[in-house]
Image (cartoon, rainbow, N blue to C red):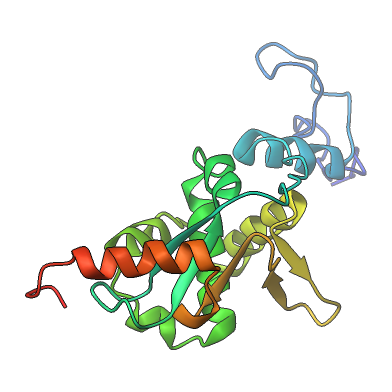
Length: 188
């Protein structure tokens, strides 16, 4: 068999698999590069790459305890503008939660009992290396994650990070103590 197409390696009498135009009734002799097809497939599946999100300096934090009912333990803080920007992308929000908690201690992911955080982390659909790399790439493009040359990632401390109750700002600490006092005795 003689190879006719150097792009798709089709032989005589076989249609080319890389064509331009719509596939219905299109001529099957015009070729595109594989890189172009891969880029178009990525955009069809995942949408265009998001723009960088600048977090305002005066943006407030949203705080959630890692363990339900344990208000003296570690607290995940995420900027409210980050949460609102990722509202339509819950899989990215779940991945951001996982990176923020996992960079502190990977075992904390197994001990997180806060139902809201567990639900957000459950939205990560594809836990394969390729699926997670896609989410990391999108979060890095938004500016929520930092990539390092060794391949590791960390959250941008201005977007999400873990706090101990003593690290909270004064106004947040006041709200936190009010929440502790408002809890019924059976919940603590």
